[in-house]
Image (cartoon, rainbow, N blue to C red):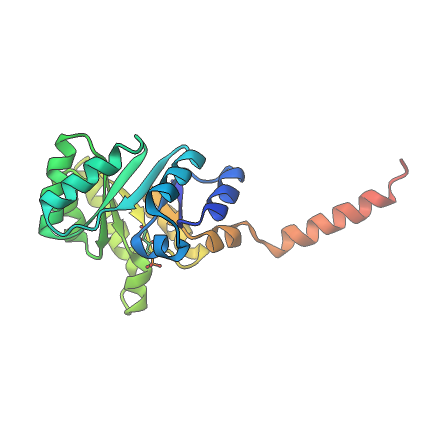
Length: 214
Ligand code: E4P
């Protein structure tokens, strides 16, 4: 499973990239707004840090507008993937963009049927938002299991990005479900490293090393 980092913060992206654990980046308008930076300059910087797919979101709500935006965004770098909202106009745009070889990530997916339609339209990725489903009392990960099974059964090329991840257990569940990608916030990646026995073990090894005559 690929791990993307779910942030628009350059420092976080640099750090995770140096750890050697990330394969791409996902952003959304809320994450970009938090940075308070000029959009194009920020995206250009991210593209230069990570050698992998970088999702940036189109904000038009009609197909013509989305296609225009997506074509322009994709010219910034061959690694740009354009996020398109899961609405009928969005899928109309995905179909056109697929024919133009512009990569898409259908976002705000909350059901298996939405994912199936996005795959039919030729999306490169679909992003089920599992944390937001958990927040309202639905088991988000179940839709991931179902869409992975369906995509595998019918050999859809569309990849599932598990999004809206809240904690390390979500990452494990995404991997067990056979998801192609988990997009993980920086704080959750940090938690994935942690185990108290690792810290205790390292401390003891270092102490014992001091006792060895050298
Ligand atoms: C990524 O593609 C999504 O936009 C992101 O994971 C949403 O996360 P949130 O539900 O924590 O805002």
